[in-house]
Image (cartoon, rainbow, N blue to C red; front, top):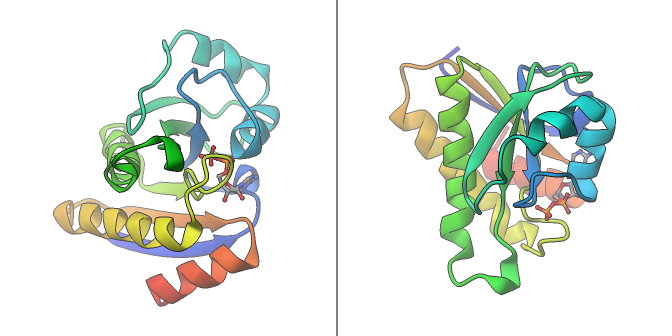
Length: 169
Ligand code: ADP
């Protein structure tokens, strides 16, 4: 397999892969958007585990079990708030790289990302998508001996078409 990138349109909580990534906030105690959907789908045990993690800094990532999800693991990463941040591109890159690093450390070979920061955190998807794609591609190149399937999960047609165009699949 080695490095594979796919683009998928739909609800990340329904995905059948080893790990899904949550666009969390720094408390890791749940929120709206994809974070709320993941907590609802995984069930209350997720919040219990998250309470013990002590939060997460922007650009960093932490792992939990997937509980009621099909995914065995959830990686929680905190994206930058676009207008409140001096270097959003760097921190967004960190989210993707640190999530992939943590996934590989845990022996994970398939991981699905939502559009981190592109909801409430205000990152324009037209800017965020190429950053996400470049960060993932770079990690796959640097770890070419490791089998990893990366799925970009898009929630609407605009981002789906954008990712399709960038990834050329
Ligand atoms: P952030 O606070 O990082 O901006 P949001 O949850 O507000 O996170 O949005 C991140 C992205 O996730 C947005 O593009 C939004 O459309 C998308 N999204 C929301 N719910 C889901 C879901 N169930 N599955 C996949 N993507 C989702």
